[in-house]
Image (cartoon, rainbow, N blue to C red; front, side, top):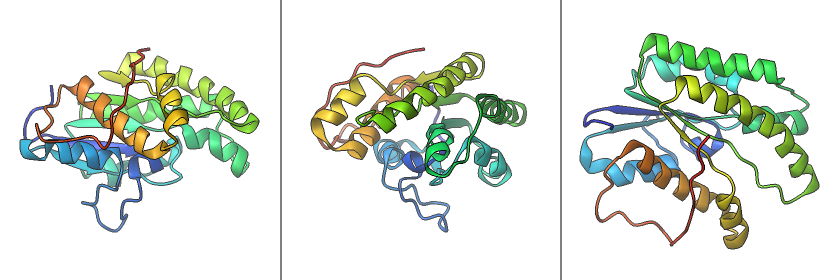
Length: 212
């Protein structure tokens, strides 16, 4: 359970950053982090978003001093991995499975050594509606297997985003709204955060959580 006056740090890529102003350290972006903050702002919990567009696992390591050490978090949430695959196809920058595991494990070890705080890992996913994305997803799932193995060792909670989420996105065609909303709700479930009674989601949805 996350206590009052705690600092929750979110690390990740564009799904976490969600167009946040990188020049404003207090900006939460316009995605699931902002929704979580809106839902708990009466409970004296500090929410910090350090998600950055295009981030890969290696970037989280490079940003560690600025984005983790200086924040001094009580809880760390990590959503990373898609760009380690995406950049292979879009930019020709490959992150091998060995490099991916080393990067991610090094990050987790640093957090454990420096803070020894709860870590929540959100699983990356891809909606494979084209042949190219299907091929990417095959590579992503190799990374997901690594993430799940590391999560068993380092994470207090693990949120898997696939299956029903994919069906929901394809049905509603509101990709980012669905992702942000489900992230926010699943985060509440695994942390036992008490959301404000008057906090409303933008539309009804159904989702079945999958555990590793």
